[in-house]
Amino acid sequence: MSRRIVPASDNRLMSPSSPIIVLDSGLGGLTVVGALRKVLPGEDIVYFGDTARLPYGSKTAATVTGFVQQIIAYLRPHDPKHVVIACNTATALSLPAVRAAFPGLTISGVIEPGAKAATAAAGTKQVPTIAILATEATIRSKAYERAVHRRRLHARMLLRPAPLLVPIIEEGRGPADPLVKLALQQYLEPLLKHHMDVLVLGCTHYPVYKELISKIVGKAVRVIDSGEQCADDVARRLKAAGLLNGPPASDAQAGDAPVPTGGLRCFVTDDPVRFQRLAPRFLGVEIDKPEWVAPDELYGPAPTGGVRLSVPA
Ligand code: DGL
Image 1: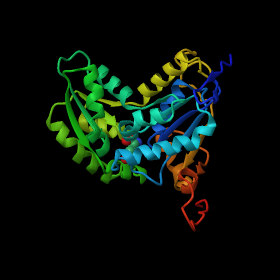
Image 2: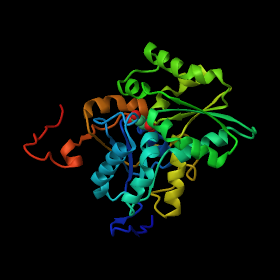
Image 3: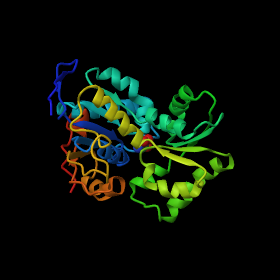
Image 4: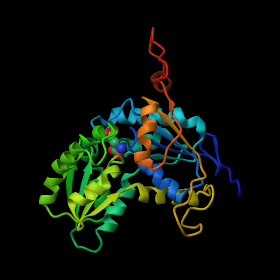
């Protein structure tokens, strides 16, 4: 494989063997990692789950932007060839500011790919109804409305915040849990009263309930999660930059899903054991124990007399 070296504007070097960074507030971004590994099985991925500060979906743009900048600054020494903000909330609230803060990195999010998939799924209907289920902050930002209307001026949008879902999912409750069913019914019923053509799972945590959600909304509604589209988008960007580490799966031999040859290294800001236990629900496979990042490593030591924390057991 050719080793084309691309100088970043801050003089660091990146090459096809550099990793892709994927970040989220918690476990949800692993659904995007799963999609990336299907399309780009040769890529090394460094994942960051900011589990200590989750949920992002109830926080302000200033707070979330600060969190994302700290994470990227912390992982910057890995010399990533691309950064994926695999969190709808963080994409909606921080993407332009984070791109401006790191001009030497290419950074993409999940909202544009999600909106692209939604408008494609709406087909040729003149005024399709596209519903968005997301965190409060994502809905408030109007990022999906803008991204959909840029592509389809005449789409009717239904917007539904679902603030309880992320904590329920991070707690490890599976789709068979009665509380999950109740919460989903509460959030989806108001949408079902209107006729929707497409339902976008506008949070990377929600695909773990995709089957149940599809069952509740019925066959006539196309349910979209942006992970796949996001992975295709990253593959396109890397190909254009000459930074692919091996061919994308679609260019390789057709057949079953490829076995990833790239590595996956995870960092978390809260309990690594818990993250490791729950990760297979999002990724479909076991992961190695993540590395714990102490708060003062991420945002500097406490001003005076700070207590150095030890790694949780
Ligand atoms: N996975 C994040 C998203 O896509 C969850 C946000 C949260 O932490 O509330 O929006």
